[in-house]
Length: 346
View 1 (cartoon, one colour):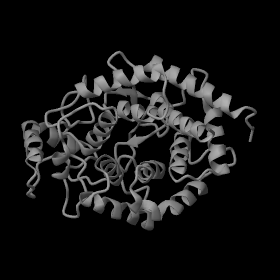
View 2: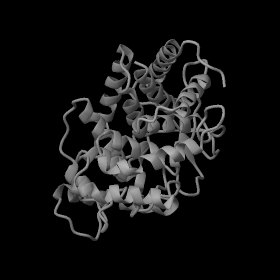
View 3: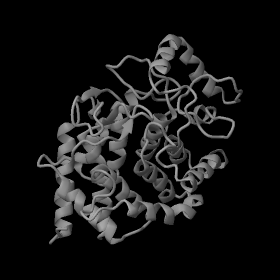
């Protein structure tokens, strides 16, 4: 392993270059690029996709640093996300120029709503829509669709019944993809927990997240994120945000992350896994040599343009026939890890 002779300066320079990269790559609409590819590492046949998700996630990652350029990026991103809000204050994954063929989902809705709330942007109440979209166990369906179970949350019905207007498109979508109307995904539920917080309605999520760790089912509990480091990242940020019921699994998560650390500092299969793992370790306040080496690996992996290579972050389903990612998305997570580590250094 190489060592850093001046870690503070190296961190500051890398963070500044990463911000410059995102500032240059942000599209005039305020969004960022995302690519879809049949290649497992997005190394060929990459096609652009049009989505709200990556813009919300990159914006979240930038909350851990601050500069004039960051503020400009966030202003443009938030303006874009507000413009894609649908009636009922919900969001769907795709956006223009993709056709409006998808139902809204609780994942994008929760992540974007949390971001807007954090930045003081007012928006209509959508908690009833989300609370109305639960199964018999109290877990949250991914897709906001009409169901044969009754709920008293009228705002849910107003959003869900509106989806009947595009029934033909939805039938086609759920027939030809691995997405299904009754999907219940645990990373998605962790994001709902992050938005709604620890409350009686989210207690089933907490119990199930803990159960998943006991079953060692991190790779199988969410058909779209489909990776243990995504699971660790999104669960751990709930603990850092104050969901103390998760405290009992902290040692387990830290130990499992460390078991995937390589001698060169990389954790998992690539640098995006490393950034996700580093953030999770910091959520649990584990400031060990594994974290130090992971940060060094992230610094060493920066490209000359100030960004980091695109890596797969989510998938089309369990088959992983298609993967999504971009340099901008990887850069967002790497910037979060570096910025938080810099703050730890004083």
